[in-house]
Length: 156
Image (cartoon, one colour):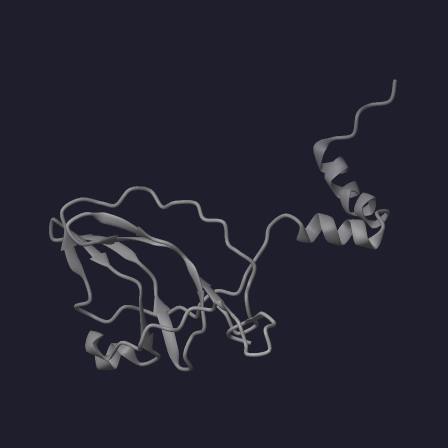
């Protein structure tokens, strides 16, 4: 009876087994494990940009990300926003402005209080400028109808 190879021996043979796969199958195996989409450039919140909330938000909702409508569009995730109660704000494709970064939603517990930081767009040097210097909200990428009648995504 032939002894069974150890886990380490089988693991060492795995790359050889992958080498026998056709290139398209190998690419599908390696790339098909997840999908990525262009995301907004991230930055930090400036000091004093938080509001106190009485309780944490519900768990985030799972969103299906629609196809990217234009090459310059980036995805911003949905989030819970608070004003008297938590309300879900869905994610969207937007066209970020040059030199602006998205400070993502944050929830912090400090000094016995729960602090909520809304997602906002700030210039690259926000730590020097403060929250009053927020960039304007970037325009959403949407399908629009040009005058010739064909549909083209904005943000291209």
